Amino acid sequence: MKPLLEVERLQAGYGFAQVLFDVTLSVRAGEVVTLLGRNGMGKTTTISTIMGLVPARGGMTRFAGRALLGAPPYLIAQAGIGLVPEGRQIFPGLTVEENLVATASPRSGDQEWTLDRIYKLFPSLHERRRNMGDQLSGGEQQMLAIGRALMTNPKLLILDEATEGLAPLIRREIWQCLARLKREGQSMLIVDKHLRALIGLADPAT
Image 1 (cartoon, rainbow, N blue to C red):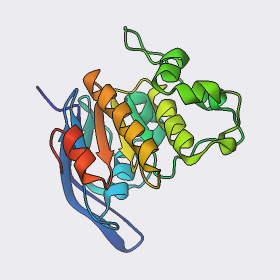
Image 2 (tube, rainbow, N blue to C red):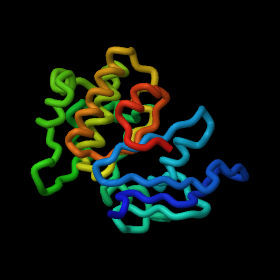
Image 3 (cartoon, rainbow, N blue to C red):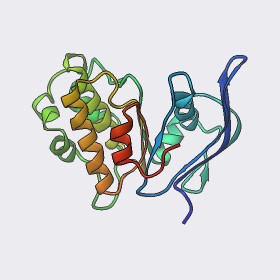
Image 4 (tube, rainbow, N blue to C red):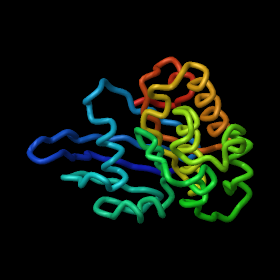
C-alpha cells in the first residue's frame, strides 16, 4: 500500500540560507510518525514546506497520490491535511465555538468531526465555548487549535510542538487525546521534544 504522505529529497530555505537538504519521510494511513531534532534543525520548516507556507527549492511532496509541490496552502488543506501550528495561532477575536466552525469542512462517513465530538474530546472547550480565544489559558488554546484542525476532517493531522510550554497535567491530557486519535485510526505527523511520550505513541521516528 502506498503511503498517504510521501516526501522525497525535499529542499527549502529562507533567502540565501538553505535549511532543508533532501528530507525524505512518509506517513501511511493510520500511522503516527514523529519528526525529531534539536532547535534549528528544520522541523518546522519541513512542515511549513509540506503545507506550502514555505516555497520548496526541490524535491517532491505527494498526498493521497496527488503531487502537492507548488500548490497554495488552501488547496493542500483541502486535499485533507490539517495543521496544528507552532504557537497555536487561534483567532483571538472569535469565541471558542466560532474558532471551531470557522474552518469546518464536511466529510461523508461515520468519523466526521462535529462540534459535539470535539466537545466530548475536550470537555473544557464546551464549558468555555462562549469565551473569546484570547480569554483561554495556554492549554485551552492548544486544545482549541487541535479541535480546529480536526474540524477540517483531515486524513492527516500534522502537529508542530503540540505540548510546548504547557503544564505537565495539560501536557498529559494532550498526549492522551493523541493516543485516542491514534486508536481511532487518525494518521498523524508529530513534532515534539518529549521523547518518552513520543516513543509510546509513534510508529516510526524520523
